[in-house]
Amino acid sequence: MKPAQPGTAGGSTFRSVKEVDAHSRARMEKVLIDMQQEMSTIRTGRASLSLLDMIRVDYYGTPTPLNQVGTLHVPEPSLITVQPWDPSLIGPIEKSIRSSDLGLNPSNDGKLVRIPIPPLTEERRKELVKRLHHITEERRVAMRNIRRDANEAVKKMVKEKLISEDDERRAHEDIQKLTDTHIEKLDQAAKVKEKEILEIR
Image 1 (cartoon, rainbow, N blue to C red):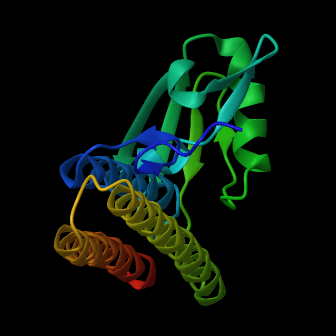
Image 2: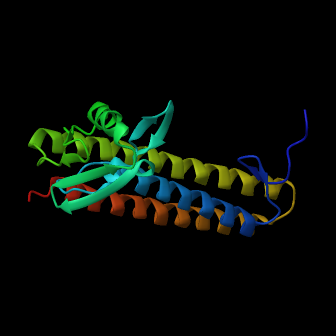
């Protein structure tokens, strides 16, 4: 077995606290972006194109993102339309939307797929909030795992005599601050989304 590298975290080697900090910050930012993307697929009472981001259409045997097979529009707050570039895709587009867990019921006139966005029921709002809390908790755990990796990398650097114990103490404090800041950003984003889900229009 190879000896442990100085200050490794997630397979990377660090020679300074600055490197650990930069690496952890980048990973935490990635978790935030990931959270934003996943939250954008949770329905609110208003039509939004990001709602259909996860929809894949069977395009000649290849699952293809919906926005790559047609033009999407929000002509009014409770309606999304899809104009397929290839009219033969109208059936597959409808099927993909119907079989998703979005609870939408599209219709078409042979040229255009219309997706009405019905108002959310009380029960559906509660389900969506539950899903949002689950997504948020998963990201909090991810943040704490990044903190753990960073702390371990710093401990290894002390063992390797790359930094002093004073440096270690300061580094742990900074890592904790970084983690707290990012978890707060997560919670803030979740709060805004929850308000959107619960808002009755």
